[in-house]
Length: 150
Image 1 (cartoon, rainbow, N blue to C red):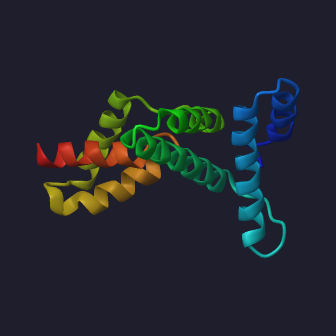
Image 2 (image 1 turned 180 degrees about the vertical axis):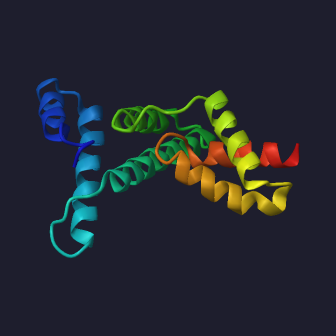
């Protein structure tokens, strides 16, 4: 568990600081990790790729919840979700900028010889694999669509 080695220490620090929001987010990570470990036979460690996917899923869940709460004019519920997403995102690798993603997508489109939307699946597969954990799938998809349509 390379990315999450400091998780227990972070939980202890949040408890000492009485930071309930951070504590809740860290406990959610720990819970998800334990569930993922026990889902497979035995107590096997997760690969770094599995950890990244797990963390991305947790961040996405919180962001999606925040959007729903905002649509319902419930900022009191949206704010903690966004704060938890930020805490969880700290364990993810540094995210690529919009320009970096566009540059990588351009290279993949050229390499794959993609001509239009019919090649979207091929380009998305290559892009998702290359930028795993470093970029949001929704952002990658939007940029790929722009490049293949334009």
